[in-house]
Image 1 (tube, rainbow over the protein chains, first blue to last red):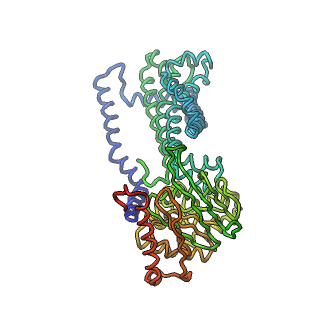
Image 2 (image 1 turned 90 degrees about the vertical axis):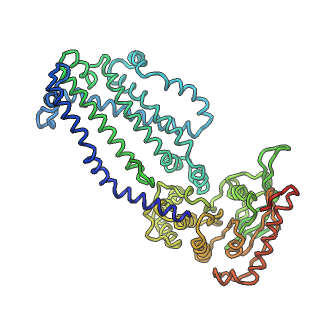
Image 3 (image 1 turned 30 degrees about the vertical axis):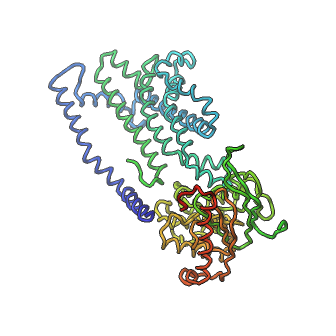
Length: 282
Length: 270
């Protein structure tokens, strides 16, 4: 029974692995037309309605090009505004996420391994994570000023929770036999952490990271709408107040694209790190 | 008895969970010895506390009474020189490591030099018939092959005593016979000493130099049966020897009787 069972899993999984490249391109062909239709519909509706607040897609894209992608060839055709808006925003997201990953995984592993510590900090964690990040903007401004530090801290504070909680769950649910095996083979605690606890909890940690990435983007925009002088969020508010609505729409397009790309990077990372899983998740 | 030359000695081993009148006694004064290069089997009815016994022998659990000596030294904590093959290979091999890496990992973690690790890993994989499969992940192999990987991992540590906890309980009959013969060939090739736990009476006789028959919980040793066949064994020939049948009957009656002795309340002595 076991023999046939594992054989079946084997074929299924190798089929999936072999076909994942093909699967991706086929998905692209079969689903991406919806996006193209949506874009054409936007264009047509905007042109026929001729509304001030709702410019056609081509106009938006042209404005995006002028704003961000019409720089000198030496800087990769990127403009000063691109550096001020996009690069600074993305840097904040990446740094915030990095802090969240490091803190979340370290604290989560400690809490997951030490039940007493877990009992001790659990109420505090539940309280802290229930505070809406927006409410913390005023406090963080007092604590960290109105520079990038405040925004990075806010991003890190918001996106640490899914990683932290998933790490705790992941570490706690490591198969007990993995631990028993490690003890029997006299594997030291540090090696056990790096080579057993972390890989065993990696699927949950990475799922947490995916949720955190989406949150990080939201909080990034939000933090840049307050007392900022750079970033996509800042640019968005600025263009809206200047009534340059094509530019405002360009910011929204850019946010959508950034979110999509960030998520794609995390998914790629997940696939790479979890390629040992018998059935890779789509 | 006290000055014994045995490699592994288990003396008056007792264990109970909890204290006072509500304590649940699992092991009740178990004693036996394993000589170097022997295969000794522990066989008993289901629920005979063999996991507790095994954990006590391997130092994962501190017994309430008695002691375990490895090479004359009392076991406290997991001793060097023990390796274990678990029943549940799918949860004891690490799924994120290739087979090769699984075998290599305990060596690496215990500071064996790289060159020697490479030699040991390839020797052991070859010995269990997994040469050329080292790069695969465990789930890419059948159950029997995964268990071969687990055996290779244990052998690579060059253990004084290899503990095997019902290692073939979850594989099909054909694979099981192949793996039993693998155990015999491994003992011959590496001079391994093996303590083998099983519920299968035939398997215990076929593999062993000595079969230790356990009772139902609280467990004690009912009998120690010496198996005096030559070490060259054969799945068909050995199993059809008349003495094999006699031993099987003797052990089986002990194990069946073990249910009855616990008390008249036993409704279903399985």
